[in-house]
Length: 477
Ligand code: GLN
Image (cartoon, rainbow, N blue to C red):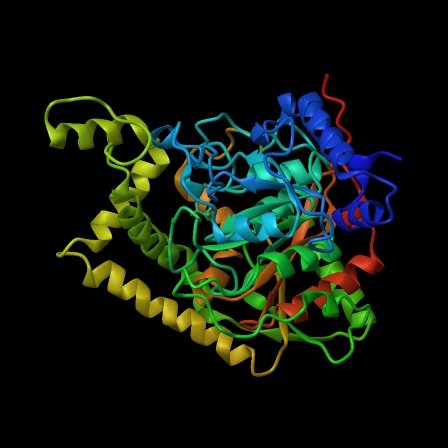
């Protein structure tokens, strides 16, 4: 038995039955990272031994290793969001999700690579070098949580946390053939997540299947008193939705998401999955989300505006890099000039421009209005359907360096961004492979705080198919 090929739930069971010790599990994964991650570069830091003590039996998943995207604070560890401006900055506190993970007895194996400050869809903008897709190392793993997705796909860790502002969990999950879950806005505390777009960001999970996903969501969800946008809607036990049962579910299929720009193989795979669900008595209804065609434009104004304001704090005084000068203004300018990468600077330009007094009404205010229309689109269709099914991304993993203009990169999130604008829960799960052997993902979107519906649909679909059980062969040498 290869320990690293077991899921988190399987490992946890073996620990409970005293067939495996958590220390040995940790060592097996840490060894595997050493062996294979030189080709993938999914970890920024991988610990050679546990960094804190866990109490036996503190949760279902006690003793299982987990990886954390490098924009979530772990006390006493470097948090740098893969940006030069934050290199060397050590976190003074634990994010809420980290506190919860520690008290559930999970072992943090390390931190994962990402696009700088989570700006991107390919993990190519990291100050720690690109992450490669374990299915084909000449391709990207998606982004921005590309390190987390690649590590889970390559069985370097059983599961990982990521963050999703416009698709950053789901698009890499789709490119790497794993399950990427973004909860409803307000479900998981953002305390200790380095802010990108505060009205859009949500921490979520990258797992191999829905059982691990439900267990991990159980651990990280719920109020903490530190995030004012957290909802007090009761957190259910997500495991109760792990039922092989499609009964009574109606799924909407938005016509706009299958039109121009989609790769025919992706389209076919998602359509086939929809037919399989139909054969299993899920009611399928064509729907229309007419304003989602504006979601990329709307998102890039809102997300960049929020990002430009959130990034103001990195001024060379309080965190990380400081370019010395005896003039304060110079410290700010030179530090930011040297510390931020091109994409971060682009977002700052875009954001400060949209927020500037002369253009605020024309851009930012207008984007907020369109955001409302997109939210209304979802509200209208959710009167008739329980879930929405779409492709996750228009293509499978593209080649490293292939998308050199920002717009073509931005388009890879065309199907995921609208759910962040509307605050809805959504998940990407594997639904096939293309003729290059690359994973294809489909997306289920649920009503706000109805994560259970998409977990149930995902779990049932996963039990009908084999796609999420296939692992990439790591023979790169
Ligand atoms: N790719 C999108 C962007 O670049 C989304 C990133 C994210 O979700 N963090 O903004």
